[in-house]
Length: 301
Image 1 (cartoon, rainbow, N blue to C red):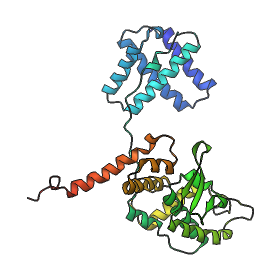
Image 2: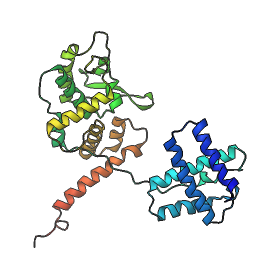
Image 3: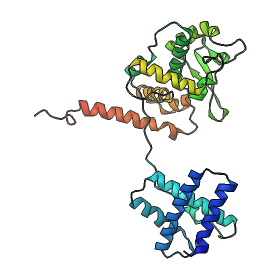
Image 4: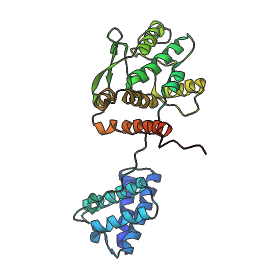
């Protein structure tokens, strides 16, 4: 490519830096990816950006994959390419954006970590009778009992709880409300917390759970106390609030096999988001099979 074509890349990067105010690190990443695109174009005898076609970009993605680049990195390269070509269309340098017709290899979906029932029981076995102990028991029990997101937990008010009906009203993503069951252990912990809540909360605070200063507890504070309680329980792995939700879904699916019910309880709009837990369930079943089936067990020599 001649200098005038490469100057269009510089113009685009200035647009990112000065108009969109992206960070220097992000702009540098765009520069690196577009340099790779320019090299690919030269290898394919593409002399200018208006000569770029879909098959050239597919070759760019395929050669990136062949060189060992991860699907996630290829997605980033193609995303940067599409942004650059969209800019050229806006500037009148291109008629259309060929990047819209090219997709990257699918990134393998990482399975979420979970705790088994015994580990969860150890984590929930919080000792002490201080108000903070009752609060932590109530929060952790509710996270596991109802599969709440962290943001849903910290946004709760006492009016959202109906312990007589054993339910909690939760406002989730998209401002959608759902009513969830609350288990026996969680109800006991919540009842205890409500009796001592005034010992931590300032008078005018409306939050169900409050932090050390008596105001609505922050997500960061919940993350810190979950980590501390996990350390106290002797669990070796990294524990974080969303692990309760993963464990809730996995244990329910193992017991019931009802994917639709788990979807509703989790508040997933798309069942594909819930289906990841079927893979976890299958892993569990596969482990049982490997240990139990006569044709799967390794024979002792």
